[in-house]
Length: 217
Image 1 (cartoon, one colour):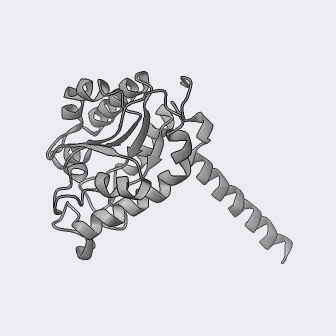
Image 2 (cartoon, helix red, strand yellow):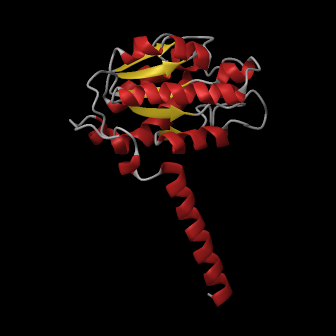
């Protein structure tokens, strides 16, 4: 290998490591990891969480629960925006959820709502859950456009709030008819694919998410 090729390889390797660190962060830097809240795992979102487009029992929280061996309460409601999520946030907080899978923002984009306001709402939801001792998993949602305009903002919010981030819930599913029941919602196979991907991301954290903990902020 020539010196030029070696230098190129080292630069590329350093860039890749920097990206991975930025993408996932240092696990010890996540807020409430492990969580101090003692309530259930909760999936909080809209129709993508509720499971629209598939038969009962094929929503991603139910499938993810089976894969991780952890009960997950599904609090998804079709049609909800981030503002709707804020309005029922106190009901969620009263559960003192140990882990919250937060997946909102798609309907804000579909309805043409302010992106700035949507992400401010998500930030407020995260802050409230952090005060309860919850570990928040922020799940990105593709914008209502061919090119995803939300990805960077979700990643920035995750870094700002120090939460675990899983990009674009529909990655590998959207625009693939075999996995979709309509233009927006997955079918049963699509939700299985989503659950598999989320399980792969969360499984390395599982022991600490289920461990007793002192408060960590």
